[in-house]
Length: 230
Image (cartoon, rainbow, N blue to C red; front, side, top):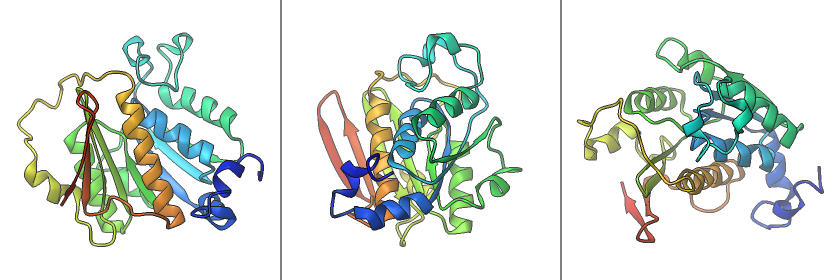
């Protein structure tokens, strides 16, 4: 274990104590697609002790351009099953808990109740509002991420008085069709998902400054990175 994590425990901001906190933490990722793939890969690789994830979709050919957990041979197979196998191979020290279902108002509280942090890797307002409500009620940090076009966003809600996703939605246009296809270059979800994974690490270890009360926006086409106070 010391060798596996040595490149991060050598950092004074993490150290052996921080690695111990990671190994004792539990994180739940809502979605195993474009954002979920890099989030899950890095949380597992970094040694978060217990990781749950939910998705009811199957691997599609159009997923492969950005959903780096999956291969061509896995087209048509349930994402959570294929993700579980890949992640278990990456780090057998991590306890993985896959849910092949859709997160709903009926099952969300039961599924999420035993996890420390909830990470948003979904693609619609309804699921985010549900995650926000459960997160707020259960006093769990909610790590938010979203992508579209060449742009992405990251924030941390319901943590240290930083406000909720519902509060933030007052500034968002929700008139768009929820069934629309979200088009992105393949690497963009990797960038945003990696930042979300880093926010989770900071929350667990207690290092740095999480994006609580702040919104990071990124435009990779223009190389514009901006933080807004919420």
